[in-house]
Length: 124
Image (cartoon, rainbow, N blue to C red; front, side):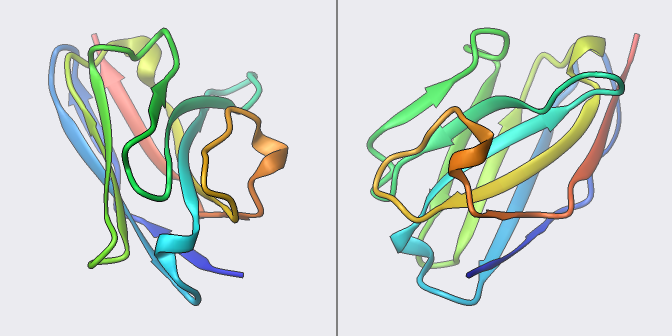
């Protein structure tokens, strides 16, 4: 089991940028594939981006492709999500998640550990 702590989100104007981070502790970070998910009010939690243990395999939801970038620093036990060209539809609570596997998954139930979530609000 690992503990995940996300950085504070915030309020951003449409077209702006924001970087989220997620610090992982408790076990070997480099043993976990990682993912970012988000949940808007009244909607199900959805996959945003995922990254493999090595960082060589990365995937994005179609809605964020070309605007968001996921990365990890195994030496710092930290996962990042760089968000650019933000839209009001990106408004949600963002969660980082850990999966004890080499590869990430787009399915929420395949992740064993979750952060507490951080609010990102994009104003028009």
